[in-house]
Length: 313
Image (cartoon, rainbow, N blue to C red; front, top):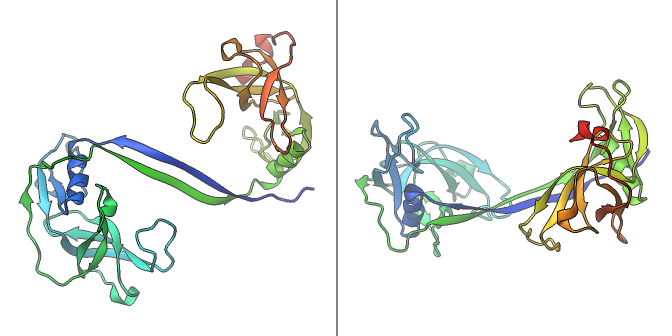
């Protein structure tokens, strides 16, 4: 039985979005050391602001400037900051109801220890030295005893407003594929493809999952499949992915390997993209030192009959 594998895995992408008038004013205001909220139909001031009333769903644009001081409504201590968190020393996550607002803003509080934090304590914004129009323009909150500040109407007009943002999304974790997929990956290292057969419905799943998703029973009968297969469906990719050295357009397809009852996905090469078709018979192409097939290419066989793969489309 092969060893259970594990490896670090990072899922990362930049999320780009445009901003409506309320969010644009809010982020531009932060750049200018101004905190804006929005007033709802029932008179409440929401910070951070939203563009539609949560009760009536109507569009709202009645902007209000609130104070940079407020009150901690609840908190949790973070003893070990992680990468890219606002502070690199231990801090408290806090919900702060800014003076003039009716809702609380989530941010961090710079405090020497959990004993220095309490619900109801007064705090103020510590502004970042360099501000770009992002929530990080608030570097953090800090303890500050003061009288409650006031709110005032604001027209939301600023020079050079922020109209879009890019939010980096990243997830770091250790992935362990488990017994079934560890065996699958070990077989791929030997340029073989193995699946597992359900003892009840007799379907062969590739990659194996360790259990049949239809019958809900464990699978442990190993079955070697392929290496050839049939294209069941496909798409033409016209947008080049960052850090992927493949010229567009190219084809990504679902391929039913011979002997398998589940189609896997892979890139199709060795044929012009506009000649790829359902039923095309393909085989894997391996590159030196790679655990997985680099792509699949046509075998030269006649196309498979639709009835032979229609259940896998």
